[in-house]
Image (cartoon, rainbow, N blue to C red; front, side, top):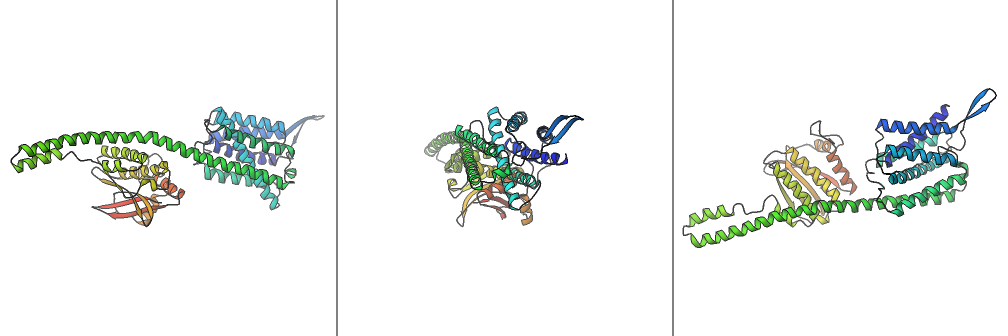
Length: 433
């Protein structure tokens, strides 16, 4: 009985983590995870517990043969297990029916690949007992740790029909392979070359799937940011056109003043009064000349927000923003976090500098704001997960600059953190690509 509980518990927990990963739910949600695992464990437990009638009453017999590949050892048990998984996932996860079906099959495929890898490692080192189940759980934890923060919109209902059909076909292929081996790992591993070819095909498909998913997310992010920020730049154009109309009127007034006024001192005073509000302000000229409308629209929203706080944002661009080797969404994440932090740390009347420049053939994106000088240790601490100089009640406290560091690492860039002295002491944070 103890072996049954141990084996069932290990299989349940590893299967649950995989399902929660692809279902985009946190395993830290103890209630959901606990209920899910309890129901699945009960199914495994009662499936392997055979009760027969004898002369002295009911006799129980626990099955321990051919449970290495799957938590069940028959086609009927597999079908029922899938039905149980689909039912539990549809109740537990916030997905539609099609997403639940596809993600359940994909998670099952991933779990099976990990189980095959674990069995192979156990076979190589001649480990006996339930060692492969511990290896499975270990690899599952590694997978969850690496991808739990990255799987956000995996396999939505809008994913291609081809992708869904391929997932179903791979699932059927692996299940057929297990059934042909009569759920016996020994028989399955006898033809190693065939097994390696099948696993290579499956892994190649999963790699392609991740690549296509990444491309799809990039395309969706581009469309979303374009739809959101390109129209915003029209507001700036309207402002500038209004200013241009005002400038034309004032220029006409200056021309008339020159023609009608004999006193040069009076003309000078009136001329200064006419033109004092005719200039573009708050980086409007620089925003209009940015060669990337999405980023220009995004920066314009930050400039307008700074105006509400009476903070001036000065944009300095020495290089084309299109040269930066990163996606628009990632660049906006970096700029948004750095500018927001600078404005939160600043006060009324401060100037925040946003700079795009090239240094030693490297492209830099930096944000500078007035602040006391910091040591290297203090700079390093800023980018640690969980560290924050904000209040205890801040949402996602201590995650912003850590996320900037993650984005820099994604593009093999490095973090910039230095003290500068302009008209006063400044700190500069950013990313070098």
